[in-house]
Amino acid sequence: MRAGGFTLIELLIVLVLIGAMTGMAMLSIGNDGKDRRPRLEAERLETLLSLAEQETQLRGEAMALELFAHGYRFLILTEAGWREETGDAVFRARELDSDLRIGLLINGENRVLAARAGLSDAAPQILLAPDGDADAVRIDIGDRHGAVQIGNDGEEGWTVMAATAAP
Image 1 (tube, helix red, strand yellow):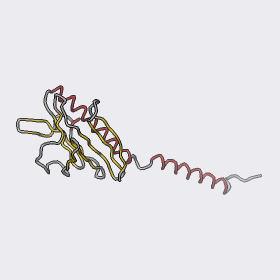
Image 2: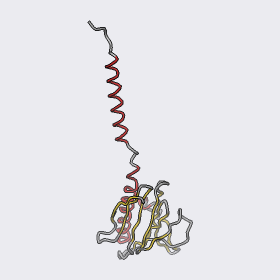
Image 3: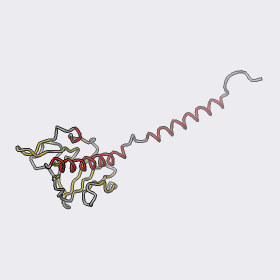
């Protein structure tokens, strides 16, 4: 007759099972979604640009997007010039994580972006007019692994176009 308790083999089997389950849990957590951040940020910006275009048509007033190396903000045109949109939380300024970068091509020409707001007196790069007239724009949001592109080249308006691998 066996005395109460567990054998060494039974305890080892339980430890192996716990280790395997912990390993699977760690794999499912992965890198905390960091590889998806460029796509998520690109989808957010694409949605905001589409909303801003609709807003300009409803208001009948132009809006603009000013891009920086690590963020962006929407601007509205006043008598004093362009100023940051502060009346609508949807169009608030956004800073990206420090490892994400933004790139910009307008009509096929690469544009250099300031590091952050206030470092340049230049006009905003992207004008959103009420009549829908716009330049061909491609915005890249990426990290060291690659970038996701947003563009307005097609008839659908702003779209998330493609992901590219880092060189």
